[in-house]
Length: 434
Image (cartoon, rainbow, N blue to C red; front, side, top):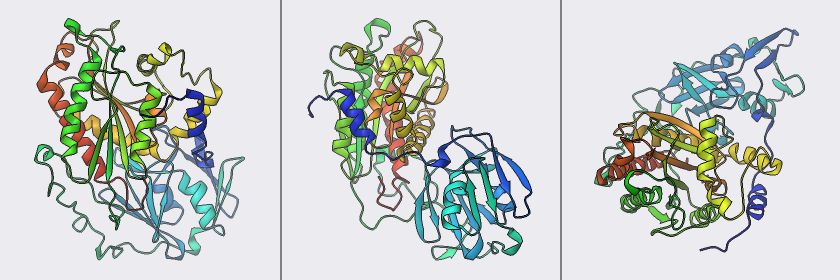
């Protein structure tokens, strides 16, 4: 185990690993599009996921041809430029080059949204004679699209075939799969081809609390630390049977591991390989015992009172060591948190959260409480896609006893293990990114 380090040194070390935020990460309500004749049109930005995006239809108004097949979107522009993006992945292709957004495209109610970064960062840098971005008044200056048009997309090639829903059918992801996880969903079509040299995939499972820190308390003495350890051990057993997967537990018995060390250990074990960090917990709301359900957290600023309450509970072990983590009162940590939450790992953490919620929802009797976020110390220095899973409420009179049952713990572990393997179906893309 690594030597204990003061949080300040951890924060400084982590901060040095990240670059400053790009212009495109700034959020405003509208973007101005200025044509060569001086006319200006306003475009509303969507920030439903906490970052700025524009509708795909805007690119058509700028002269680009667009088409969608499944989760893939293709844009054809000037000079035969072809841009391919995929829903919920930050990686995309500009012709044959693989690039990365800070955020990710997504579809809501049938409409696709593209990160604003494509317009404010990539277009001006790669097509400087056609686009310019004025940061002061948040304006894109665009060339007259009548001078060029994106080509017809009917015969755009994808690999060796024509781009169509038939040629993009997902492969059989259950082949050569651990029988214990064969009810996983098939993955969506890959945006990026598989890497030539496949690396080991690392899964670090963190059973919350432990030792003198029992975590939340439930009925008849049921302790959060015991629920977390039981689920984590089953997960570790299942995932260790998967081909090419190495599994680590931050604790395998009832002992206390400082919060800061858990992320450090995960980063050390991951090394240069693709990996994920899963912290397993159980929730509690003694003041509202009717509350039940499951939720998954990624690293970011807490937005609601509920998120702040959960963060306070899960960060409580820091107080025992005379430490704290409060972005509201610590400007340096607030800056670090913004930097980390906008890093290349954050979109993947949100995607992992989504898959975890989806898999647990297949069996859990409680409500899906959704994807949450907060400044959770245990996630701060785990430099990989990282989530904290709250599998249920110990304080609820019906759900609390359920969390102590072997069947529930087994189903929970299988669900999260399936989520991890489904996530690895499209992470990392074939770029060596991890």
